[in-house]
Image 1 (spheres, rainbow over the protein chains, first blue to last red):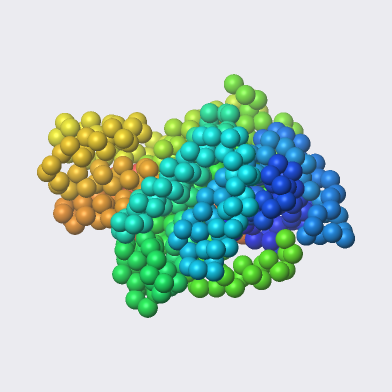
Image 2: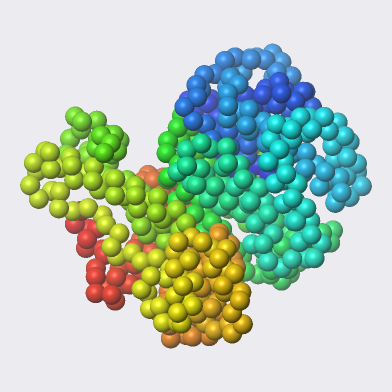
Length: 295
Length: 213
């Protein structure tokens, strides 16, 4: 989806890295199993994180599997389980709406690609929306509200971020335990706000150039596609507060089989992604990361 | 009550030192300062209570006289509206109570019904946004409140807290990065010193109570 939510690989233990890769591959297999080959292309780090965050006392066994991306050597994959199923359903719903968004707002070659992908995934989306009707309704309504805000050139950063953050928060409804559910809701809201703002900061120069909506254009007054240093400080401080809220909520989630990877992602991965976005090196580093880890 | 050892995450055969260390780390994690005006503050304080009780039970049962006398408390902590110089009208007091009870929709509706926007109005609106996770908007309202009434310590503290980036638990050992491009461990010391100054201003002292533990 966005890819900002990922662990810092160098700080993972070897066993943790294998486990992380197992969840990523497991999610990809789960997508194929439930929604067909094409939906595999929607697999992403953010929902890999979600699958790990929402995992409860389910078995976390890995089994070797082959797949089109790795046809010669089998990879350890997490077996289908409740949290993978959940993550796969949500991936298809949100992924499809994001493509629909791209088809509507994008410029010519990209928008056509999104439209074709949308068509190809229509059946998969229908299935996923039927399985998670509440989530699909939330995504539809909140993205429509976001579209209205965008059209009105909403100057409130928080109001715009709120729509995306609310979508993520709604996922906490799947958590049974009431304490965990409240904590997950706050965690996911803060995470959604961080993702939305990082995405806005990352795209700022391009959005200005192509005259697209970006909340930072109207909240601050960027010059030459960049925020003034004092505005950037203000923005990053507000991200810090969201990160604090996320960390405080995470402390109340309790531990599970993925705690090491989740902690790495939260305490190190998110700050590192933020650092890279504001240094303007995110896109480059994301590419290197993909190549190196061969995920 | 749950088994005190499993609450602290140590085995019954753990040494006093290990128990103390586990207790300290958990107390640091769920410390009320990490849940400043946070909608989950009630859950954290329950957790804190559980940890304190577990630690007390263990130290008492091990009969290490005196060692049980310290535990992290939340007494120095006050949340948004309570007692912290609530000067305003009866209506503002009610709004503060709603905010503290996390009834943000009702608090916002009452604030929106007030047409005269004074400094306290901006401060309380900022508190509503803050708890909702609208950190940017909250900062703007806090700053407006502090500009309108520069002498008010409550508004000034809110702006200061906003600007210095707040505080949250970070595990010990190499996980000290923050979103502002600095080192969180460094900020933590700063926050501690800041909090100590605040405490001292109110007649308490924070750093020695942690230092001796």
